[in-house]
Length: 72
Image (cartoon, rainbow, N blue to C red; front, side, top):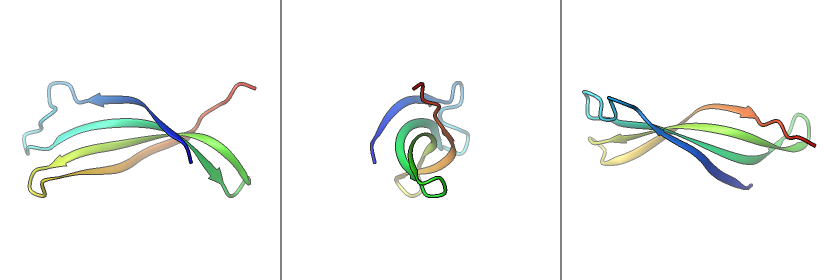
């Protein structure tokens, strides 16, 4: 699998929310195997990244994904 970070965005006027959670989003492009179609394809994955002060750790959740259209 290959991948690259293409975009990171912080919340404006609310990066640190009232509950102390720092949240931003990161978009990565990865080549993944599509078992249903039996092909490798490029996908855009959007992760929500948050700092959890009570755990002293970062957490990430996959929020969305989509197939990237390639021009052949």
